[in-house]
Amino acid sequence: GLATALSSAVLAQDVSGKVIGFSQIGSESGWRAAETAVTRQQAEERGVDLKFADAQQKQENQIKAIRGFIAQGVDAILVAPVVATGWDDVLAEAKEAEIPVVLLDRGVDAPEDLYLTSVASDQVKEGRVAGEWLVEAVGDEDCNVVELQGTVGSTPAINRKAGFEEAIAGHDNITISQSQTGDFTRSKGKEVMEAFIKASNNAADICAVYAHNDDMAVGAIQAIKDAGLKPGEDILVVSIDAVPDIFSAIAAGEANATVELTPNMAGPAFDALAAYWADGTEPEKFIITESKLYTADSDPQGEYERRKDLGY
Ligand code: GZL
Image (cartoon, rainbow, N blue to C red; front, side, top):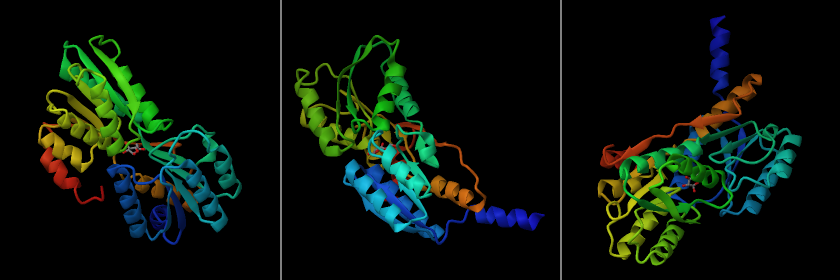
């Protein structure tokens, strides 16, 4: 009856008392720091004993951490996989130990039965939305775009490149003239943008920079300024994550557009685990979070205020 239905509903959201290991990539970007903060807060609110491991962006450290969680006999493991390949063995070991694995914010090239579910954005769509914004912004003008790619071999870098290229295909006036990884960090984004500027007779023919995340865009903005040019005007700036600092730049007219990526991947992950533990419910294999475009018309100052205390 109703009582049973209610109790199973309550149970379904209950992960309290569970020990969950989290193999986090590191803190390469403001967005990643916010994801960690939100995951800790969600664990706290839900009574989860979260065991946190920071891999300093090294896959071997993630594999070590996952093996440690298996040895510890945790109830579940969250993994944000730094790159897409090389996970089959360690995920098979977790499966062997009957410990469910949930992937956060990036995917893996591994058999889907090796993880319970993957919580991430549609990264091809993010790249496409960024590209469509640029197509709209430049109209028929010729536009040489320089691209700051995310971590080589990561699904966001692969997918955001693909989505952007899809959007600009058929617009022959828009070309990607230079493309290199900035490893999702501000410092590398600045360094690579400086190299792009040097290689293009001081940026005279750079019309826009497309960065796979806001942190690299913020680094690029500094390099553009150092070259005596106006970011957001001389060189358009479009990126992904919607971190507070990109809203400050947009409000100052120094950046033009960002695509939002929620840092709350843990919420859907814990919900899926709760239902799985409650009654064996198999979640969808891919839980897709929303992506939304923000520009100067989207109250950037207000968006900055709303996000500034979330742990970025
Ligand atoms: C995307 C996520 C990316 C962020 C970056 O889902 O993996 O990693 O866009 C972060 O800020 O480094």
